[in-house]
Length: 252
Length: 365
Image (cartoon, rainbow over all chains, first blue to last red; front, side, top):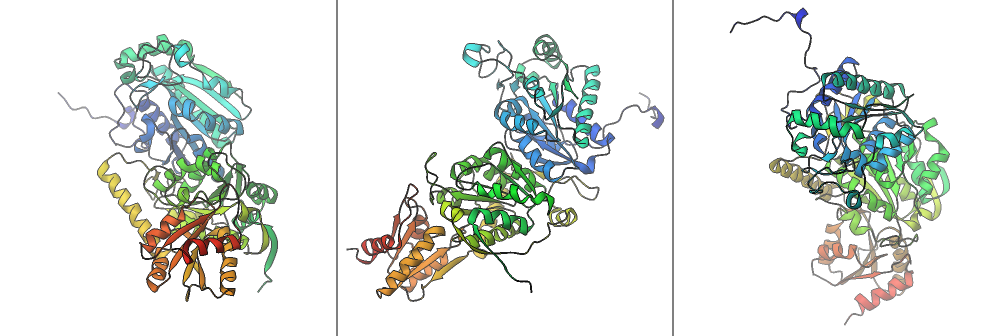
C-alpha cells in the first residue's frame, strides 16, 4: 500500500465544518444522516451559522442538536412549529427552522403545523416522512401506507380499522401563508442534490420573509421497515413514491 | 420627580400595561374568560409600535405556551396569560419550561372547575400551580396578588424572580382580581433590554444564533442517562430549596398578639381582612396571614405562630381545601388547623368566615 498525498486542488468534497464529530445514533441506511449533512452544508454555504436556530422534534431526530453546530431548542412532541414561531417573532432576522418527523408533524403536531403555515410564519420546515414511528419502535404513523405492517398494525394497515394515510404537504399547499412546499427524497445521489436545492430554497424563503416553506423528504426507516438499506431504498421507490410523488407542490 | 400616574383599571387590563412598561419582549395568548382583557388591551395598545413588544394570538393554549418556550429560550422576557382550563392545556409546556429552566411569566386568572366549570372566580388551581401541575418533579414560582396594584407590581417581580432562578413564574390570580376595577399607580416605562444586553446576560444558555466566541447552546429538558438526569433533578431541587430560603413573601395583619389566625391568599385574603376587623371589634384577637408567594410557601412564619401560642388556624380558600394541607404541614400538629371554603364560583363574606372561625376553631369541643 502506498501513501498518496492529496493536493488541495484535487479535493472535490469535504465534510461541512458545521457537522460535529459526535457518533450518530441513527441506524445505518437511515435518511436522517444525509439530510443533516445537507442542512449543515446549506447553513455553512449561506454563511448563516451565527444566525441559525434549529428546533428539534421528539422522535429519532430529537438529538439533531448533537450533530449540527448551531443553536438549538428541543421542542415538546409536535410543538416545533409553535416553538419556532416564538423564536422567529422575537428574532425576525434570524434563520429559524424546524426538523420534524411524520409522527411529530402530521399526527400530534398537526394543529401547530397548520396554524404556523396559515399565519405565514417565516420559518423553514424539514419534514422527514418515513411512514412510521422510528424512535418508539416502529408503530403506525398517519403516513403509514395501506397494508403496511408496523408494530401497531401487525397484519397491515387496514383502513376500516386504522383509517387512511394522508398527505399533509398537499393540505398545507392550499394555505395563503405558504410560499413553498416540495416533496423530495435522498435515496439516490441525484435526489440528494435536488433535495439540497429544495432545502436551500426553503431557507432563502425564510430569510427573505416570503412565508412558510416545507420540504418533505420521503425517507427510509430500514430498521422499522425491517429491510436492509438497499432493500429499503427499493421499497421506497416501489411503494412510497407512488403515494408520495416527488416534486414541487407549491412554489410562489 | 414626575407626578405619579394613577389610573382606574381592571386587574386584567393592568397586566397588559405592566408588561409593556416593564419592557416585556413578547406575549403569546389565547382568549378565555375571565382573562381575555389581557390580550385585548395589548392589541389595543399596539406596543409593537412603541417598545417593540411582540403580541401574538395563538391557535390554542398549547401553541401559546410553546411559543413562550421558544421566546424564553432566546433569553427574552416573554409571557402568556390564561384561565384554568387553558392553563391545564399549558401544563405540558410548563413541565418543559421548568425542565429546560426557562424564565418566563404565566398568568392564571382562575375560574371554577373541574372541567369547563364556571367563568366565576375560584382558587381551585392551588394544587396545580403549587404542586407541579404536570409530569416530573418541578416547581413554578407562584405569586398571589390580592389587588389590582399587586397585579401590576407582580409582573415585574415575577420576571425578576424568573430570571434570578431561571425558572417559570406564575401569577395566580382569579376572576375577581382580574375583573375588578381599582386605582393603580403605574410604573414608568422602562426600555426593553437590547439584544446585546440579553446576549451578555444569557450567553451561557440562551439561543440567538451561535457567535464565533461560544459553543452552541442547546435548550432541552432531555437527558437519557439516568445518572446525569439525577444530577439535573438534584440541581433543580437545590434551586427550589434556595427559593424556599430566600424568596418567601407574606403579609401578616394583626398576627403579633393573635390567638387565632386566618390564612388566606388573593381575593380571599381581601375578604378575610374584613373578618379580622369584625373579630377585633368584638375583642377577639384574630390575625390574618396572607401568603404572597404560594410557592415558596411561608412555612416558617406559620410554624412560628403555632409555636408562639396561636390556638388555631383557619385556612379560608375558594376551593374544597387545598392550601390547608400546606398550613397543616407547617403547623405540624401543634394546634388545630381547619378549612373553610366556597366553590363553584361563589365567594364567601367576612361574616361567613367569622362564623366558620368560631364554629371550627374557637368554639370547637
